[in-house]
Image (cartoon, rainbow, N blue to C red; front, side):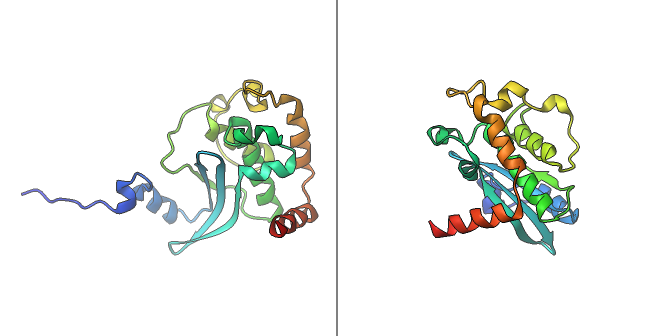
Length: 183
C-alpha cells in the first residue's frame, strides 16, 4: 500500500519550495530575496537565526522615482533597467549599513532565465560592490541595461540616475525616509 503525502498549502500554491528553504536556513548566510510583481521589483536583505527571519533592508523599484526615474515611465518599474538600479540601490544600502557583503541570492519560485531581470538585478548588486559569483555571459547586454530597447528610451537619463545613486550618503537616506513618512 502506498503512502499519500500531504502537501503544505504554500507548496500547493507554488509559492514555497521547502527543500530549498531548509537548505538556505541551514547555511547560516544572509540572503537577498528577489521577487517580481505585476508592477514592481521587490527585494529584501534577510538574516535568519533559528528559523526566524529578520528583514534588515527592504525596498521596491518604486524607490527609483526618488533617484530620477522618469514619472512618465512609471509603468516600466519592473523592467531590466529598473531591476539593475534596484540591485544597485540594495547593494549601496548593504554597504552603508555594514552588513555582510557575501549573501546568497534567493529567487524563490521564479524561473532562472539568462539575460533576464534576475541577472540585471545581480549585475546591479555586483556593480555596487557586493560579492556574488556569477558568470558575466548570463548578464543582459549594456544596451538592454541602459534601456535602449524600451518604448521610451531611458538611456539618456541612465547616467544621471546612476550618479545620483553613487552619491548616496547616510544623510540622504534619513531625508528620503523622513520624506516618505510625511506623505
